[in-house]
Image (tube, rainbow, N blue to C red):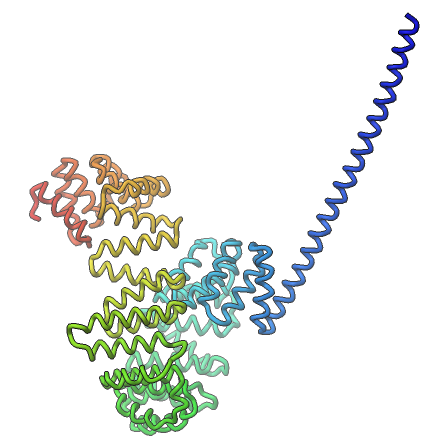
Length: 586
């Protein structure tokens, strides 16, 4: 037994030694691992600290380059930072500001990106709205700022931007309120006072108009605002046919030194309106003064063309040296002069004589005008369409040129070309919402439901979370195809999303109606209340639903209240059928 006990004691001793050794090894490994982890964390934090410090310094350099007007260098450095971190808000804003120096169209996507990164940042909202306004999309600019709602901060720049957007959509009362708040918050700023007067001058209130004139008279005594204030006063006098007053103010304006050329052109307009004998000599003096200034030459030529002096302007232009005639703005002005005298062959020769470089889209458009009037009746539309599509293609990278082409087509009453150009704008990524608004107006006037649906689908693609856009797609789509299962599903989604919006409720009721659930459609419409149902369009819809639900008396009452409703052809067909069902005169 003894040897066995000795062996057991020896084994236990060996186990204790092994256990102690194992614990020591584990402790040592744990210590090493801890040291390594701590070293890694320290290194990582150190690397992050250094990286953050380095990026901060690079942003400082980019900001300084931007302040110094070195836009390309600032943008290049900011883009490098953006490529490393696409959520770098300061880098995005530097890129946007640099791009805006060259074109608001280039800046707009970056302004949108900055806003998406920090929508709560008021500066981002204001800058996005102002850039959107600069590209001509006034409605969207206004909506960006109005989205703040009743939580508008006491910031003069915010109200100034809102006033500018409201002014651009002819909401002069709204603009006056916004500019007034901006001036109240920053009373020493003369520009804000000028904008307030500009809005008041166009309001339907003689008291506000007179208040604006008094403000402008005061600002006309101040150097920085003098010309702008006098210009506004002159334009106001011309609108009111107060020609003597306009002439006095115009003479006062051009008496100064270093008067802008646009002010001299306005002086000509006043002379013509007043029937002044000085007009001819004033035009002649400007002709002599602008010989070596193509931009001013173009402005004078355009003014002469717009004021019934195209033959005289052409005679003058033909005496000019070749060099200024190569300027794109003057080439466009000469083309307008040739149109003014209906010299279609001369127009064709003019636009085909030389390359217009970056303005080639306009050259092709003018060629299309010449072709339209020179071609036979049989080939006229084909030639116009072919050349106009080429003009759109040439302008594809320049939304501003596309917009100008659309205005040219409207001016010349080229209806299909207007539509074609507006769709090109709508698909260009800039000015798209304004173009879609114009297209929708065309389709409404034409009672083209399919065209309206096409616009609605494009708007929904731009604004996938917009309930109004979704509603339009659902309603217009179901008008044209009640069996579209996807639209039915979208109608249900819309109702869940905004169950109290009257327009959306009516759309959901219409979806139920197209499924054959006529009684349910009536019940849903009833949730709108009596006041809403008195509106002609809602009365028309409820009358249709009641007729199909078998309630002839209710249908007749509703359809009688629908008198005056503006209906699409598809809606009108439904109303006519309903009237027949309840034995009313179609």
